Image (tube, rainbow, N blue to C red):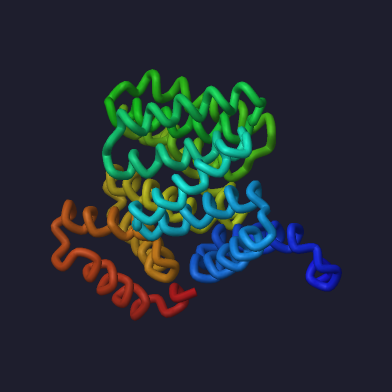
Amino acid sequence: TIRQEIGDKSGEGATLNNISQIFKVRGDYETALDYLKKSLTIQQEIGDKYGEGTTLNNISQIFKVRGDYETALDYLKKSLAIQQEIGDKYGEGTTLNNISQIYDARGDYETALDYLKKSLTIQQEIGDKSGEGATLNNISQIFKVRGDYETALDYLKESLAIQQEIGDKSGEGTTLNNISQIFKVRGDYETALDYLKKSLTIRQEIGDTAGLCATLFNIGHIHWQNNETEQALQDWITVYRIAKQIGLAQVLHALEQLAENLGLPGGLESWETLMQQLETHNPQDKS
């Protein structure tokens, strides 16, 4: 590339980092990690602390999506130390947010909320609208878990307003999905499905594979509640096919629990069996 030819090491490190994020969104975590490691090597070599902090953060997200929270947290702590050392407020806000999500995944909501509040303060201080939208969204999920749906919805609406204002499609897809879950828990399945369809459209549009899995998983639940059993199973089989292909730990875990709740024998294996049965009846479904 041009940057390699002219010896622009800093630019090369940043470019490798950016390329990695394209593979991450597509769900190709192995390739994404390769690019991130190359980026990190260059940044450490030339002493690019700012780039190193960002790359360590991005590496953590690959381990998080694979369900390796311990390693993810290690990378996030290294990233945070660098960002605080060099005064990278933007990076610090993002990393605090990402740390919160590790505690959230582990069920330690109190610690998660502490990190989210620190993150939000920084993001509002420096005018990081994209980060603020994501953090408000994550805060809403803590209130949802606590059963305070009213407060959760308030935070989600704030988040959505920011994301639509700045054109953050990825964030908007997530927030629409999360709003749907508040209506679902209230028993308003029709409104829930409306939000899920909007979320699905955006996630298909931008190629957000992991997000698409989450939304389709939730759509399956609405079909199930409406006694549309066949449609629900088809949704979940599609989710299984994608999640298995790209190794989405959290989604596969959710499918395993779902199989148990539905009384399907063999956990994840039951989805494999159903997928094969569906493909036998409808060969075109393999695509």
